[in-house]
Length: 460
Image (cartoon, rainbow, N blue to C red; front, side, top):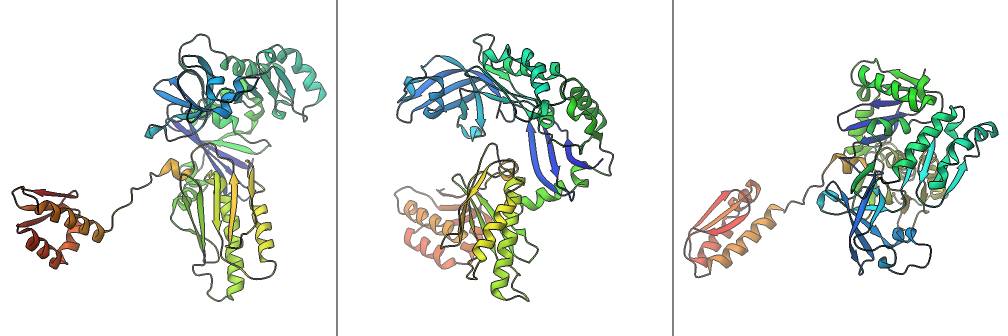
């Protein structure tokens, strides 16, 4: 059986990767314990504060977590007109909410939540709100007839959608999932905290793509647990499960670790010799396309088109593999050849064909920019793996700033000798520019000592 998906169990987090028809990793997913990431988890929460200036409601999710709900989402709670947040919720009230996106909660910000949770199982999608029951149009009349009497009573408590994957699955198995998900949306009491979250293993199995290709599970113990869970709850994937028996860790054997390293590198090389770099900011992601060594042996016009076409395919791949969402701006190399912009747009369309989430893009602007919008949900690969470094001050700028502060302190009435401490690079710069330290001693009429350490100026 051809392996299309690898599942790597872990501590606190499982990972899975989908392989393309050539065996190359095309997408990567992280499946976290709720303690690491509460995205998609459902909580019983209490409204703690209404901010009329921003039309936001802030909530206590329990377990030390805070939530924030916008007016747009809060309007889902009312049927009539709602012009402000106080028209939708009141302080002290409790409600069931779902975390909808990762946030900078580690920096003190609240998680974005919705008052209309939506749980997506393998066969069933359950949503709080109006009662309704929908069946996928791909389900046969026989399957719909068998499922209807089992699921209709549950649909009186909310919305249920039966997915196409339910075809051929025992009706009682599908109904059991519907029962579990609908119960998760109904709190048993007013106690704050977590109501429901899928485990990392469950997340990985729900994400298994349709088809008849294999899923390799690493590790005998996890494989046994996965088989047991699939037998009881998701039998459609049971025959596709296989124990990974390759050499070395599965993610290394199938090239996933190598793909991760390439994605996290400052430069992502293209076959022609060009390269792209991807820079994420809070507002948008910028992709810069560079010629690199692509000009060697090629006419300039041909080289520009080749690099841009390769960059378009690389952008499509990395937005999917790194799970980069929101607004993305790509700075392609300017091209003047007739039809080049049209060919580039066709390449972008092709690159996004396999993306599982909606992607839209503009044409090429007069400055060579293309704007791309891709639905964002969780953290990107870089946000998960790397912390943004605080910008370091240039040594000469830090040195001049210290001299300025030392001059001000040295001309004060306080007694003592001047002591400057700074990182080695700053000290080295001062050592090679002794005219400046001599001038400082002359203007302040004080002795001066320079040593390595944190940036500071003192009188001792």
